[in-house]
Length: 544
Image (cartoon, rainbow, N blue to C red; front, side):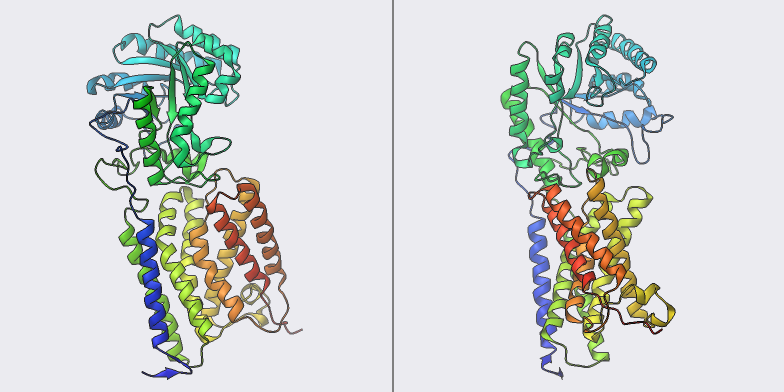
């Protein structure tokens, strides 16, 4: 075996084997399926009811001219009739006025929604159509919901809402209710007198103090009992409850496939034991909601939006990463490629690499191998709209390229380039193609990190944490800053500004999101590591 300095080629081979073993072990742990006492969706025990919106792909109710074809609604209802007894709607617009007739064909009952807002004429038009439908389909429409969270949105007073409810009640024979977040019922008790039954929304993820998934079902039951004690004379229907399958954490509340399945299963089991009615939100993932509520808003469905298939078929294991073998294999392939780049660099330029250089390559390769599948999964979930797709696509590309270029730089002894070497005065720019590529990767990573950090400081509620792809990119930069750092030079202004911004944002966001949010803490740690990396940068003085 040929040797280069004190280190033989057995060293990188041993480190590669260790890295591959760690990648396999972590993915085996990440993909471990959960076991539930009750299947979330069991065709043998149909759901009482589920919220339904008909929009697919680019369809959105935010465009007022959107009209859903009855054939599309009929296709959805035929699928939902296999798992639910009833669907809840929220308006009669966008073609939903045809839904009761279509529901009758497949044997579904309907809780018909009437959308109220601050436009009185539009409210009356909604009421007139819904009342007409209730009279035409008395065997299909089992209740009317006059307004959904209109008090929460502040678009109507409680007195006006009660008047609208009484107007509807005077014209129909079916039960009439209003639906809102449970706190708003307790704050507006006068609405209680107007309704036939109380419809409350309990969304543990969205509570002011978010509830962990393992405590969600108990929280739903506790709130239901609290509201029942406040309004003892009427039935309490849980009009919305559920859990998102993807999106950002809120304190300890983690959206995930496994957590969604667990929460839905436990709530349904509790409803059966405690004998109360539940309407789940929602039937299908709704991509359009991501425009308003980020990734998490579009992923409350029991059925996948694109494939139109149940996320949790009865009898199948439930994993957060159902494609984990492909993701693990891709990560292992990237890990091997990073080691190959390091070894080929060493063959072309023999010298005496330090142990720490090989360890740094191994750390970068292992972290990239583990996180590649996670980052790719997040890219698929979080890339909505051109801006998000471009941002997360560039960050993932930087996460893949950074460890490859970093391995080359670590083995060749090159330092991390400064921004001035890329875009500064021409005499000080680097002429190395690989150095330019590494510098561009660092610049892209820094700009995206800064943009997302500022977003979390000023408008954090619906933003996703880019911990996976960002870590893939930053780890090699950090290793280069410590191992191949120039001993002389001046601290560049640009790097110093970005370093300060990232460090301040990391501290603020960490405190703001709280110690339970590991997505936030991971992202803040990476911001801090990138900030330290940029602070250690040194640039040579440009000639006068």
